[in-house]
Length: 423
Image 1 (cartoon, rainbow, N blue to C red):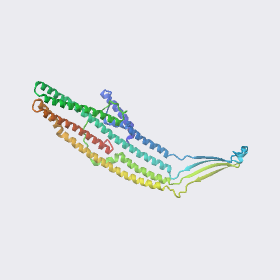
Image 2: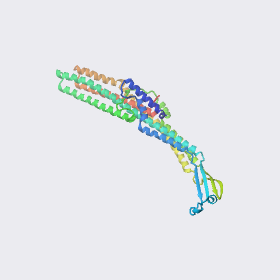
Image 3: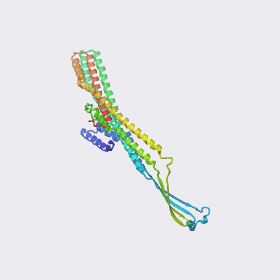
Image 4: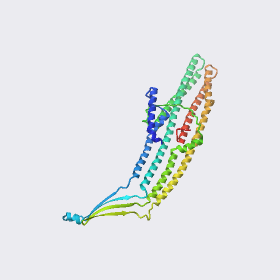
């Protein structure tokens, strides 16, 4: 299970960060998506708190495996408290009575072994539940990481647009001075410049917010405040079939494994309930001294199971097993449904990305370039050029959003399958 390899992940993430720093020659920490996931698994406080449940269950295993403590008993009878003058060696030997005994509870029905096995089965189910929490954290980190990539791509695009449009403003100013355009057209160009400057400001804020959200998922102490991410918005086609992914999910999903282990734990509880129905035996060995003689005694006692034979607990655990079996079937349905929904979402986003890459993206850029070229030579009006500029901007931003949606859908599919390695 993944949690067993967290120290190795942490070492790998640390080495990756060190190598990245050496490669760039800078002190800024730069992390990839895999680095981010490893750091989150190591430093996320909510996950670390959840992992303590495993340790608590292991402590319960110790308790379950403990044997009953022996019982020591002692008594002294006929002490002459109200006749102190009778205290003498002869009185102690001939009159007073002393008893010392040690007793032990002998458990029948393999109760201790059943308790231990039930505790171990519960620990195994808890481990699977924690692994499922790690699966959810993987997706959350991936989603936040893609949000940072989208914010950075949008910021780069906004800065580039602002720089390109500044040239248009400079040309417009020169044309105004030369009398080639009127002041009204020039003011329209200046007003459009405000939109580009606003886009840059909004994109910078979105990048800061995305980095903070990712840092929260990693744990604030996992990375410094000025960290950066490494990666790009990119389309990676998926060739796997839905049926293959569903089969893999039933093997990999930790919540389904937890449901299976829940059945095992319920069966252990049934065996424990039946073992608890067995009657235990109390045995005591005693040493007595009375009237100058010493003797030994052996006592035994046990309940007569006329009424309480643990019938209620045996019945309850039987119903609990039925509940676990139904929950396992429900989890199976959930797993298959999650994979199918995630797969459909991925394919839908893939179609959108392909629409842009099939020609719309290039056409929007070409339309903008042609309009700019024609406007600078007086072949088209200013409004036509600004309209082409706005259309290209909208298409470029929508394409980046489509890429981010596709990558997020791919992360969601990985979460639904329960592994970061898809066939």
